[in-house]
Image 1 (cartoon, one colour):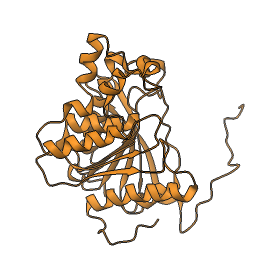
Image 2: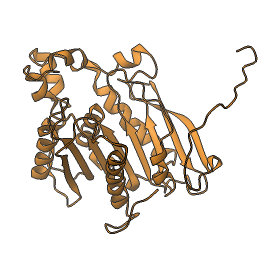
Image 3: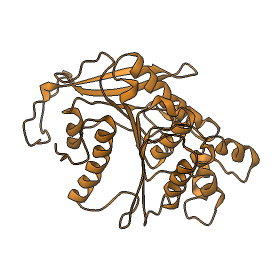
Image 4: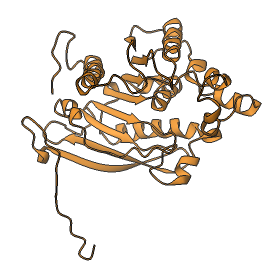
Length: 297
């Protein structure tokens, strides 16, 4: 503490031909609609990206429950980085990255800040040549799945590919059903739709209630049959409505795991298979691999 010097005590082992010097990590700030500065963490492989506005880009977000979505090392991400994909995390409001006010400004009647922050982050990355619009993929799970569903209904033409895992996309119906164990405790986060003003506000962004006849990007929605937090019928209902209204021929897949709950299957390798499935969808959508190719890190 006196000198400010740090020393490396332990580093996670990475198998294979891995050199940390190949990768660059940067922090940028996007401007929200109301002028707030949104931090974005970005990582890419220096020798594979051009940063000229032509690279594929994957943007991840969550933005709820005051969760601090810290950028941490994930070995499986190397599978994307080593294929020249730029990976970014938008630390949007509703999370806790910038303190309590950051959370308060992304809940209840300010929940839409979460979604517009994410859109502004995507537009910032495109404007600053971290990726190409026709190669922009977005990803979130649980309340992050709500985020993906909401921005899909708000600005579907901005994205090439979207993944919403165990997606909380039927917000209004779920929050009106007090027999679901978590509903009443969630009033603090989303509001009580039995009160008219909350009903109207939640309905204005709940993805299932805002699907329109238009084109949507390649989309993967997942659920778990035994999920106690997000009922499997929510992603199923959202996909059914998208199938009814969408006017394009883009991919739309529903994957419901018949043995998993909210946090996917147990076991290290089963979890990696789920990650591989999501990555395969991204790579397929981007045209980086074909259906018959093997996905490996």
